[in-house]
View: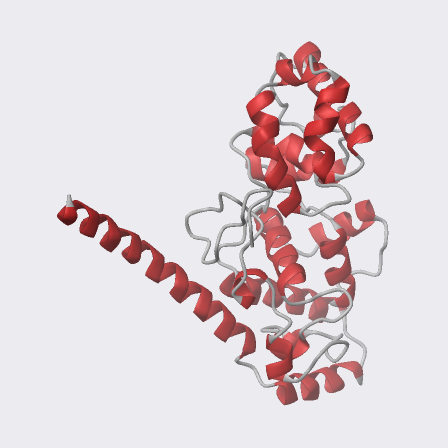
Length: 303
């Protein structure tokens, strides 16, 4: 028994070490470029207008840089099938992915299929999803979309955008999340983080999500759309914050026309990093195997 326990511990350590190495490498990558170099390039870039071609080249380079920093980028909602991802995405409106992930285990234990959720007593469903906020409206959407899946799609989540957006509570953003991550259909997901960053990087000036989606799709090959969305959102949640971006710890600072809007001192900027970049737990209770950070704690867990 002691030998078996030792073997298990060795295997666990062998799995854990590469993950920690990836996390350390990601943080080092994020802070390796001097702030002064970024400032010099940014000032020079602002001195002359950027052509369309130059912007596209810069945007694609940013994507390549982010791919190196976040090779493990992924949707931050826990799910095991298209129905769970659809429900989780609807619940994620006006709340964090963490709170959704802490809520869905109990939800799917009680309502594992569209048929089960369609037959739910509204008040009971509301109570289960209460932690995500706006629980009455969300319960109505969940029962509505589950009923539609049961009655119109044989209990299966459709794999076409035109079908998905006919479901109650499902818009283009939710549809693209489901298509990209449950069906492998490329799509750009324009949430608040994505919209904020692409405007900050001067890829677009549009505010309307559909116009943002169209303009960004025109910059990148279709094969990059889904992973680009994950990388941009990861960067927005970890480094390029809304109110105080960590400019001095940003791996793409030399490519960013908005450099200087946040903290430029490298050491102070490092204190602003979040999730695995800052040594904190992530948002998923069951993250992918290659995620280098710690999983989130279940709802109600201490600490």
